[in-house]
Length: 194
Image (tube, rainbow, N blue to C red; front, side, top):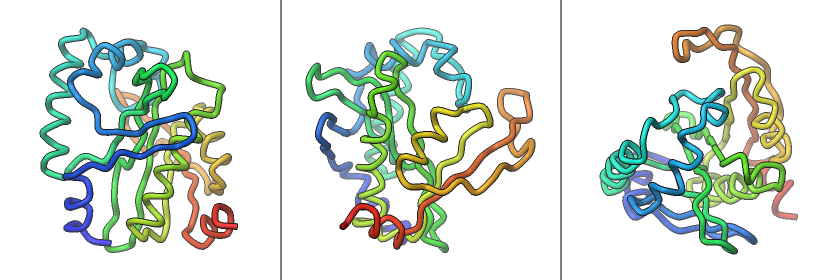
C-alpha cells in the first residue's frame, strides 16, 4: 500500500453496502441528518471534536469534506440506514501508516441507532476494504478510556485489546488515557473468510 493508491481509491470514493447499511461519501445534503447527532455533547464526549454549534456549521464542514474527497485526502464514509435512507453516523479510516501497512479506523453513530450492531456492521465493511482492497497488514482502533461502547465494537470485530497509553493524548485541554485494539490480516482472513 502506498499514498498514491490511497489517493486514487479515495478520490473516487466507492460506495459500500452491507445487509442493512449503505456506506457512501458524505455530501452537503447530509447536513440535517449529521447535525441531529453532531450537536449533542453526549456524542462528542469521547471524540476529538466538539459539538457542532449550528446546522450551517455542519453544512460548511460537509462542503469542506467534499473538497477533501476530490483530492483523495478523506477516508470516512457516511453510514446510511437502507430502510429509512437516513445518514446516522460515519465510519472509515482516520489514519494510515504507509511504511508499515497499518490503518486506523474510527466510527461515530447517532445514539438513537446504538445497541443494534450497526457500528460493528459498518466497521466490518471498512475492515474488508482495508484488508482485501488495500492489503493492509494491521488495522487499529483507538479509544478514550471509559468509551466502553467503542472497545466493545472492536472486540466484536475480532480485535485484540493491546493496552492503554496513560494520559496519551491532550484532548480539549484534558489529558486522556488512550486504549488500543487491533486485528492483523491473517487473523481477519481466518475469522471472516471461512
